Image (spheres, rainbow, N blue to C red):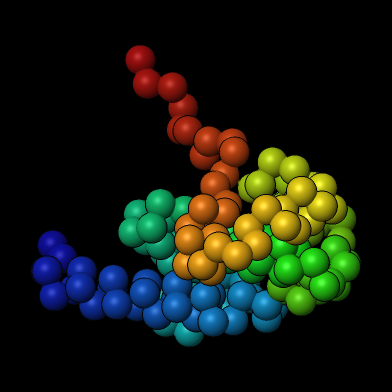
Length: 145
């Protein structure tokens, strides 16, 4: 049986992983490397991270990258390809696919529509209002009778 102290220690490790993703989102990160950093197996980290934060470490990383891409695209001073590489994607095609999955429109369309939409608004409100939300629900397990 796990003690409350064990659970708190594990939550602290999961927070370290989340903080690392927040800091290093543009770097090449994978679940195995994140797990090694906190001395867990990749499978254990993925299960516990999902339990704690509601999404896998990979999904969290993609959300951070897309969130940052949205900010850069709203600024309008970088091309979509430049934004793609700036936020850690290696392929414009993959970037466009992930962006469209999370935001609902391709990055080029987002850039055009949002360039002036948030001008003059405080950045804290813009960030809250434009945070990406998955448009597809997470896959559920097998149907329960």
